[in-house]
Length: 91
Image 1 (cartoon, helix red, strand yellow):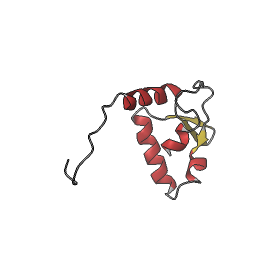
Image 2 (tube, rainbow, N blue to C red; image 1 turned 45 degrees about the horizontal axis):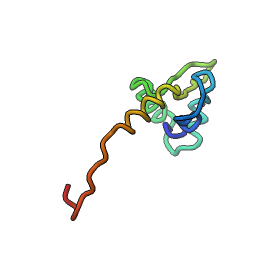
Image 3 (cartoon, rainbow, N blue to C red; image 1 turned 180 degrees about the horizontal axis):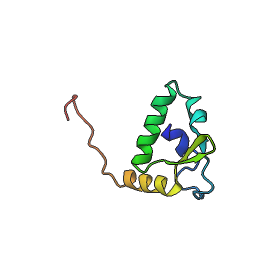
Image 4 (cartoon, one colour; image 1 turned 120 degrees about the vertical axis):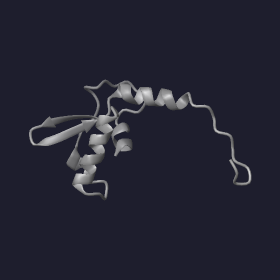
């Protein structure tokens, strides 16, 4: 779900929160094989964590990822040190 939302405004592209593609929960659910209640629960958790924005539009709930959030995540992960390779299955 998050990957689909994030693909609409990949890091390094120029888009604003207003430009971000918004999906209804039903649209997102059409591509995943989980119940609507489980999908809603996961989206609410992503929203609570600040990764996904949500707004009610009529009877539907729209969700999207703010471009600033994607930029912050990309910066965070690019700053992580490289992990040493395991040899012989031992860390």
